[in-house]
Image (tube, rainbow, N blue to C red):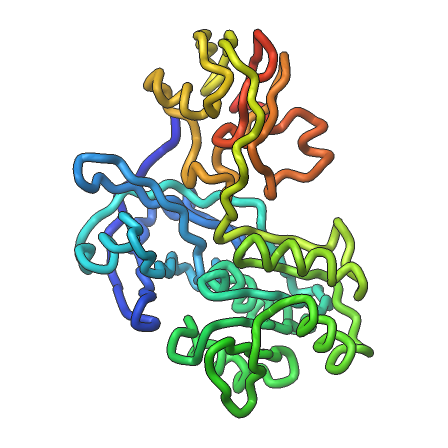
Length: 348
């Protein structure tokens, strides 16, 4: 069972016209459960229009600051984001799940790495936590951020990033891309193959980057993963998290039914499911309490391990090939292929 805790909103402020930041009060007795690593997210849970809605938001604060803050961008037709912008107020309480996520950066005092991050729009939120942590915890490390937005007015954390540049001029550098505005000191265009190649060849030809962190739309990440391999990027030093996932054509799924065995919190349940529907949907329909959040293949909350049988995923930009080979699946994207399948949420 996923633990849920009620946290009070202590601060709410606009970052841009369509983005806000929330900060939560953390009772001393919960601080341990909510310890986090830069890059991780928390899941907010709220009943809206008689339906439980869960949304994951990356923590944008640094762990050492002992602050728990997230940024929420308003999304057209976004049930949760519009509720948060229009209804949620300072003093309100909301259910929150403890931090999760494998898109992480853990700096220490001996770290001498040069990190490079690419972010687009609200993809900046986990990167902000990483930047703040590296600059305050690793005095010999450097951080370069390439950040894309439509214009300056829509740029989340613009003032914070400017302050960091002024405070750490030798260790933090920022390259801004605007796709709908021309400004002195910024580049016009998008973060795409041609602009990144030009940037790496012209500005950073003599710079060795140790780790790359990518966060934004799926299309951007797919391109960057390929381009950065030309400049020292590998499967082990390129890390990424999707903030928007492109809908894919329906997978040719097996027909009929399968017997599903689910191990969750040490208890095994067995029931019949349809092969053409995601495994997570079937588990939720049985009123079990599996870990999940986005239900769109974007976060990693719903991971389980297949211990018997076979499943195929509609899409997967989260798990590595080796993890899939070990039997890990995103249950929100997994369809049963075999007539009998066993999954274990406890062994991941």
